[in-house]
Length: 447
Image (cartoon, rainbow, N blue to C red; front, top):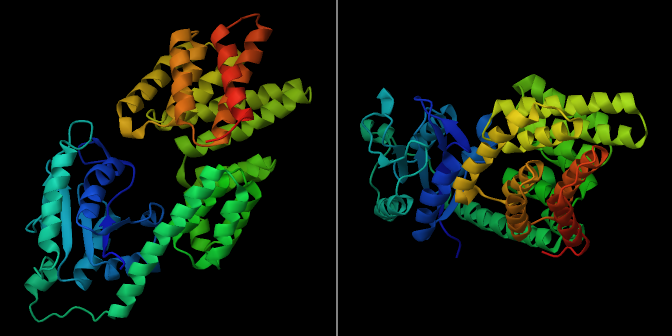
């Protein structure tokens, strides 16, 4: 028997409230909402990030109307969430829970409604997440099996009746949600096997890509990326729903695949179009910096000294612009200082401590520590000639790696540092050890 669905309406990632405090909504979802929903036997689903930034598609309306339960977080004045809540309140007299961080207040029109409060600390992280989740469990239990009217529309207009919804449609919706989870599990297994054939087999079973739920298509796209099937990535983008193919995440992944296939000009155009439309960002600039970095290496190997110098400078400045957009995202910062090491750019000495601090702050958020955090620690330790720190970071990186190309990217960066220092007659023992260990793991790759 399929589970009833609880649809969660909330922002994604880190957003700021009216006071300017950064709030990590992904942590709120993972530590409070999702555990509570699963604890009462419901299936949690969350609004797709990219869809919530644009027009609400058929899928969004379907979830709003057919999900038996819903949670809407109103901590910040997110227009999409408020619109979605309005649709939900119009369609469902009950089974909608509103939540909000206690430090903020509701707008006038919904100020009198019952809201489940929770507390955040000064860094925008939940205070006593487990206790808050336990309280939310009790609130969810009070909704299940009861018809307590929580929609202000139905509370104030007693002659109003909800639109009839065919129960069969709800059952089909539940089954599709369960099927979505099963498909994602199969894709995850294919990534672990590191075989493009496994991902292709899943894709063939899905039918028309353009008709699939967005989250499945994105998972398929990223699964092909994980197994380095870049041509398949491009084909997925070409066959998915056109509106989905235009969202930033998909365009960025398209550029990633184009660049890996040697289509440098196409990748540059794709990324520049994003920047022109939305401005620079740490992610988009990080990908564009990689495009210029690859061109620089190609020019070096071709003996084109003048072009190489120009591309190296362009790569550094592109990474720097991305890092300056969001100092918390260390990825473009690490790449900038690594290339500055190659160029012997003195600015790296003042930038390295800033990048190190960004990494330290990420390390403090233990649920957000992944391979790239440790790999970046490794690069910075190598740049600082800190053997003890580099040995520790290397061990942590090897223990957390999940995809072969991650190791290849790190090894490539360390070779750039090694080549530059060799030209300057500098020797770093830690650098040689790290490269040896990374190369061995790459050559004997098995997760």
